[in-house]
Image (cartoon, rainbow, N blue to C red; front, side, top):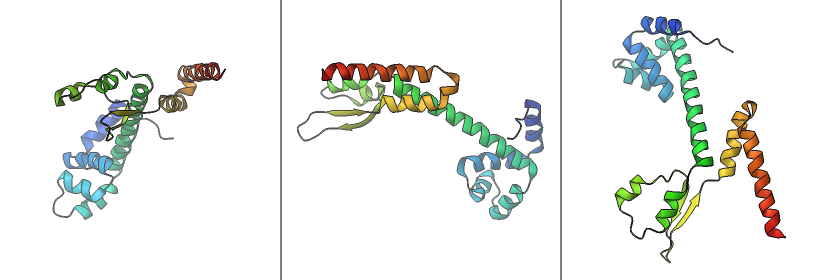
Length: 171
């Protein structure tokens, strides 16, 4: 595992990189294509050669590595936040949509429909709304946060409650 760079080391690397090189690093991390990254960073004349030379530069590779790690952490946090919304979010706006006969575009834009996976309006005119699976979202959260506790315990409690309700309904 590679050591994490200090703020001073990051600033030192950034100072050593020229603007075009720094832009190349950012574009490379976002696109995954060195030639496109070189072209977008301003290496117009021969982006293929520029990309090849940049990929041989240790400072550029260090910055690409740093940006990649930063991006992965950010995406992990975004995914976790999304799973939390799916697991614990409100369906109130989706339910109100069922009772709104002709919603305006503005009304729809103001609704939080993040939990909705599918909306259908069959020939009979009734609106059908399907939601993402809350239990699957909880499972994903538990997989990532088990070591830290909390989510795994909550998932177990919800699972036991669901089983208890199911057993009562079948009696």
